[in-house]
Image (cartoon, rainbow, N blue to C red):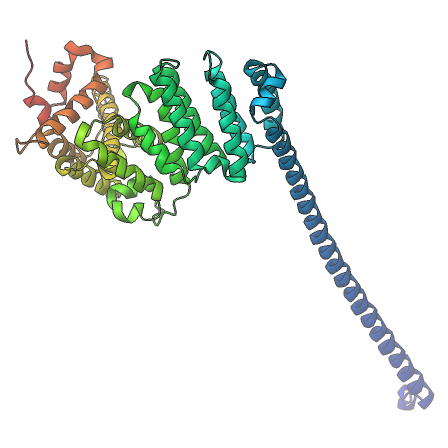
Length: 439
């Protein structure tokens, strides 16, 4: 075949070039369309985001407005029912007023609890319950409360005037014999609780702690929940510098460095002052110190019961806390929060240790062998149990720790069986073998 047959003509080349140009224009047009489509999508996404933000903001505004309306509604109704003498008379007496307010508070609690006047009316209702059996003078007391609420406004539940007035009127009723001691204690603790309900960070915290320290030992049932709420609020609002697993929070840090731990907790500083002031009269056994120790042990250190043996493991940082707490108990001459926290820590530890040693005895009877760190056992024996040097307060405090430890074992063995248990545990805790038993 002739080679010329394979040479394209000029017309064919022109047609080919035109076709390529058309394809290029077509591809460019498609790219432009795609870019425009992306721009439109981006604009739509931005618009949707703005709409979403506006909708979310609108929903927040509506929720805020709804909350504000609810609070205002509760405030208006509770203010209208403050126990002024004229209102009590129009209701038909204190008993009738009390019944109406009880119903109102039940309904208001479902709407909003965030207004101070709601909590003030609860306090008035608590007092009315106490005063129903008072022959005379109850309406005057209630009218005085209503006037305080009106004069103090939003600060009615943080008012020192309110607090002092209520406490003094309750004490006056107690002294006159119109209120029993048990009833007075219960009412005062209700007062403290209402103040904390209205504002957990109330400026009345010093006054509350001071009044708690004056309550008799039998008031623990009412005073315990009040102190529990104060301590829990401080724990929840504490910014801990340590985050390692097993860290027990603020009250562990008080054992480690009391001044540093209490630096940002004025309520606990006030509690410390109360404990100091009670020491001269009651030593380490004041009602408030005992209550404090029980609450801290049960609320913040109870987890030690389940992990006692782990403290003896290498690099467990709680072992250092155990050593520090034991030293504070042996040497401290001041009843302060550091000493109270140390006692609570050791008590929680000994409960867990008694359980672990009982499990050891049980598994030994079954032919198994359960190991507890010798390092930990040695620390317990020397730092907690051996009463040396034989001088106060070391002797009595170590004796108290041994008695507390034996008390944990008593339910499983009885009083007569404790001697045998001490012999069985003697190889692990030699101090138990040195105990003297009366025949």
